[in-house]
Length: 407
Ligand SMILES: Cc1cc2nc3c(=O)[nH]c(=O)nc-3n(C[C@H](O)[C@H](O)[C@H](O)COP(=O)(O)OP(=O)(O)OC[C@H]3O[C@@H](n4cnc5c(N)ncnc54)[C@H](O)[C@@H]3O)c2cc1C
Image (cartoon, rainbow, N blue to C red; front, side, top):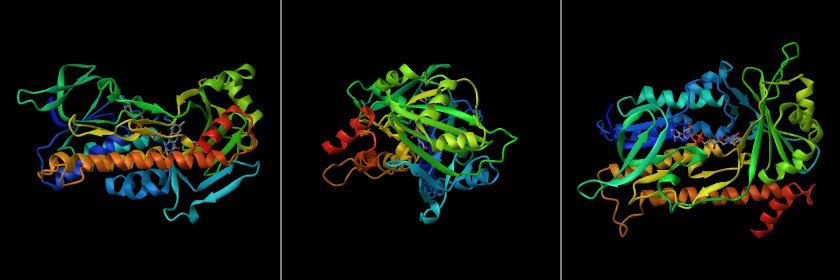
């Protein structure tokens, strides 16, 4: 295997694969056919493996088209491998359900994705359309070091678990998601956390003797301890997710061990009306015995790119969002596109853009984009949490309302 690359991308999730595709498009248009991009991801290729994070809004269609993946995703949805999503129903701020329908959205319907299949579609697109530029390795990155060559130029030295030879790259793109690998390499880089939100997810399957579930809306319901959502997935499955703060779990646990499936199901009944109705109406039963638990808090790096040290962070690695916003994938896609363009125009387009007096640097534009996106997100998040006023004395809601007042 070639061990020297122009760009190395750690992580081939949505952000990593999309960056690779966009960079390859740019290299192709510049006839820079000798350029080499390496994507390293440790994920399995098994598209049956369940991955949380399924609601993709209609706004994403445009960028999926520009990456050349929309047709494949839409065809998969037509064949029932993804579901279409036609809106939201939420009991938030009152017991009643309020519906929003994508008919009134300029972008039309969204998707409830089989996430593993969607992520794999992006990887396959990167592999097939741009095989001249892109190499994909299924492995874990164990170490990355910023080094200098004999001419004093900086480069990245990457180690992967199955290969003793280090791989060299001119530019490093961190697309490793919430694990944010770049932090391990740059001790001065800080990642701030703005809350302690955790998500507990359980997959349900419909009883085949029951009439099919045709509710394609995302259903959101708040309760005293946090909030819930459920979405209809392909293969007659439904995901139900509960969100609360890390330190509040023990208070709930006194009554219910929500990390156990039976107790989780009881907890749904105790704290929801609409989700309980949806689960019981179709006689859904839990798949497996495990409740998946994962961080869902808002986090952001102190810096998203460095010209001197030749790196950028994209997707969840740069900033991660509360799932209430349904914004994670969309931002991962846009940060990937802009990140690839910033890298290309900063380092590879042949013109000098490193004179700070003359131009706004592409990497600075990228930095500002993530900063602005995250600032806007925090203010919108605070606005939506403030719309729920029924449990003002509960710690979960108090925290979010105080957050609102501070702004
Ligand atoms: C409970 C929950 C619900 C969510 N729901 C939604 C939703 O409905 N809609 C939405 O838009 N977003 C949602 N999100 C957020 C969304 O899933 C993320 O924003 C999105 O996955 C970010 O994509 P990414 O490519 O940046 O990171 P990831 O999807 O996390 O991909 C990172 C990749 O890096 C790889 N990797 C990491 N470290 C290494 C390493 N050392 N070596 C090799 N590979 C490595 C991993 O294998 C992985 O494939 C949700 C999140 C949570 C927690």
